[in-house]
Image 1: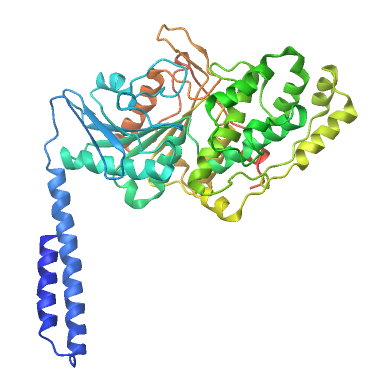
Image 2 (image 1 turned 90 degrees about the horizontal axis):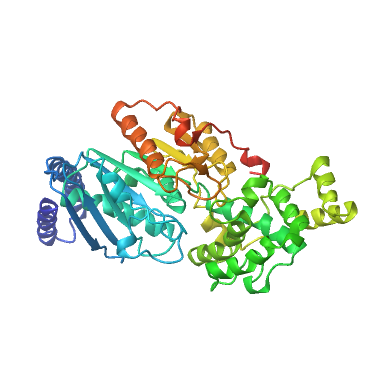
Length: 468
C-alpha cells in the first residue's frame, strides 16, 4: 500500500510539470505507471500472504470478541493446544439476534437444551468462531460477517491449517453462497451443512401448498394477513396459537389428512414430530419466515407458478372417504387448491431467486439431514444433488442422513422427526469426515455407523413438487 501511494505521488508530481500540449507523453507515462502499480500490488499481496502464513498460532487458550463496522458482533475461541482446525459456525433462521452468550448455541431459538458447540469442539482441540450477523436473518449479512470473521482470525493469529464452515438451517444457504463466490471461498477449506436450506424460494413456495390446503378446509386465519403476503408483525406465538388447537382437535382428522396428503408427506412426519408438528412449521414458513424475508427482498417473494398440481391416488381417495369425505366434495376441494394462484411482484421475486444454490461452488461439502425434516423437506436435498450432478461435480458433495438421535446423551436414540435433530457425536462424526477429506483429498465413503443414528436414504425428486 505504501509503495502504491508513493508511486501515485510520483505520478502526480510528473503530471503537474507537464504542459497541456503533452497529452501523448502523459498517456505513455500513465500506461507505464499502471503497469508498475499492477506489479506492485501483486508484490504487496504476495508479501502480505507470506506474512500471514508465518503468523504464530496460539497454543494457550484464548477467547476474543468484538464488533465489525456493520454492527455484527463476533467471538473467536481457541482451546489449549489448538490443533489448527478452525470451525466457523453459521447459525440458522431467527427473528432476533442471539445474545453474546448464545453465539455458539446450536439450539438457539428451539425448545431443546443449550448445545454449546465450543464445549464439544474444545475436547477435540478445535477452535470455533461465530458472528451474530448483525441482523436476525439477512443472508447477505451472514455472508459478509462470516468472511470478515475469517480475515479477523488470520489478522489476529494466523491462517488456520483448516478452516471449515459448520452451518445450520438458513446458515446452510449462507455457506452455499460463500462457496459459490471465488473471493469469499478462498478463506475456507470445506463446508459441513446441517439441516441446510439450498433454496429459499423453494421453501417459501412449498409453504403455499399447505397455506392453500389449510385455507380450503379450515379457512386461512385473518390475523395472518393474505396468503403469500403475510403481515410483517407476526410472531412465533401467533402461528403456534392458531395451529395448535386445530391440530389437537380429533374432530379435524379428515381435514388434517387432506392437508397431509396434499403436502405429500408421511403420517409420522406430519403427526409425530419430536419438536413441533409439520403443520406448524409449514404455516410458520408461510407467515413469519416469509414476512421476515420480504423485508430483505423489498416485496412479496412466494410464488405458486412453479408448483406442480397434486393428484390423489385411488387409494388415497378411498382412504379419505373412510374418514368422512364425500368423493365429489373431495375432488372439488382438490381442484380448488390446485387452482389457487399467487404471483408476486417481478422485482422482488427476482431478488429472492438469488438466494438459491446455482452452482456447486469451490469447496468440498458434506450435508447432514433428517429424512423427516419438518421445515426443510428432504426433497430439497435432491435439488442440491442435481445441481452438483449437472455440472459434473458429484465428487464435491457427500449427503449424510440421520434417522434418530440421542437428545440427552443417555445412549437412548429417538426418531429424528423434526428440524435439525442431531446429537453432538453425529455433528462431530461428519466434521471429522470433512477434516479427513481435506487432509487426504479423498471423498469419504458414506458408511457412517447405523448404531449412531446414521442411515441410508434416497429423497423423493424435487421435480415431484416443482416444475423447474
